[in-house]
Image 1: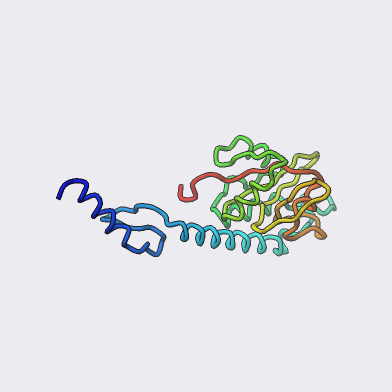
Image 2: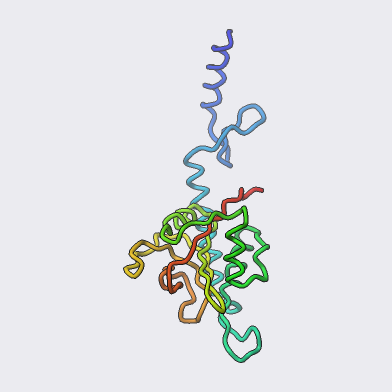
Length: 200
């Protein structure tokens, strides 16, 4: 058998094999590639897991407003919420201890995150719907606001003039929950997509 005959036969045998449980077609001893159907199933499963982690955070009594700094005023804990979700969902621990404004500035220059313009929230929504982390953030004094984008269809904001994603909002008790970004933020936030390899 010549080379071309061998190549055709080998390819036909490989294609005839069903994908394994993890979505790979295995030939000899190495993985060849993902099948499309399995990739969609994996993204859907990861999106469902992300939504569950978001739901857990916004219903956690420990994340409701309380007097954190002892000055007698109730403090919101959006930074605690984002840190909790990122840690539980993806094992990201480097956001711990940062306030909202610090998180925003950090995300702008960290290589694991891609900065998206304010008027392109659909990219953040699509990212979350594939089971990947996305964060909405806005700078304000004395403290800004941050929230993780939650998988879902989003809703149209007549105030902003475009469709906005849902976010896992940890804030004032009246706004705790999975709500439209237009309700969580007073103005369009900046968006950050986690683009690091989840296996790295």
